Image (cartoon, rainbow, N blue to C red; front, side, top):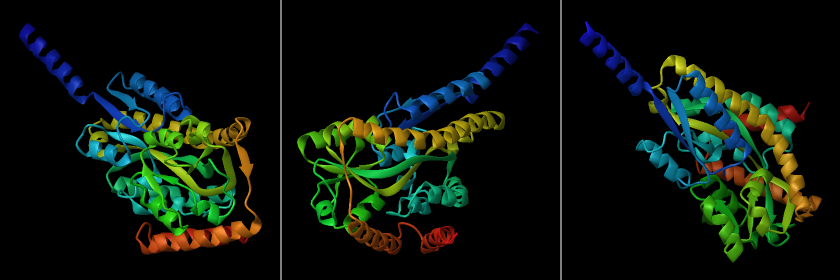
Length: 329
């Protein structure tokens, strides 16, 4: 009887150890940012409520490489997921890049209207591609920051303009504007600004602050160039190893964190923009005629991206139709 009891206990302990999962998540966001703090707090709640069966370990600051390197590491099981920009997840669901179309949105009201209609389609597309996500998080509007003032298209073409590695949409948008982009990983940007290898980039204010890029530039052009969003995605092969009960707990806390960050990031970007000015960056504004020229270039670039297969004609027409409908109100 004693031997049977020991055997049963051993099997139970073995079962617990097998079912325990540590989700390894990579991100370019550095430690101390609200996105890392919020997800780490959610991870603590998950570990508590699953009694240690599910834990999370974050690798911040891009230590696991650029996004394509991270996705390769997920495929071989070295990592299990990432906090990633939707525009860099094109291999999973190409139409997730539609939000990154240049100058697609005029303001946050338009963003909210389109996202209320299309976010779930993106989430479903990721799931069909083998990824479990927990909602989209606003990254914010990307503003041009530069060493030299940029107020015309000619100014823009003259810049040594950075874009992220493996970001086909940004690369093709840059080329459509007549810019010859310089492709670098996130970890190389600050050093490249210091050396003069690059002198301009487009980024949401919160990223410009958190990555310390603002310390190496002097101007911000008061024109949002594109909208960005991100998501925390976990490989379904790993997520499905978690029991259904624990999956619900994980989804509850990561979904709640994503929803909170979606709202908080907008407020943080507004504060970060003000902080850029407080740090001494000078705002330069384009004339109305230059904005019109840039908008025309943006529309041509967006249509070219359709031709190149970056997102589908069907989705591009659908989103533009919704915008026309909204603007006619």
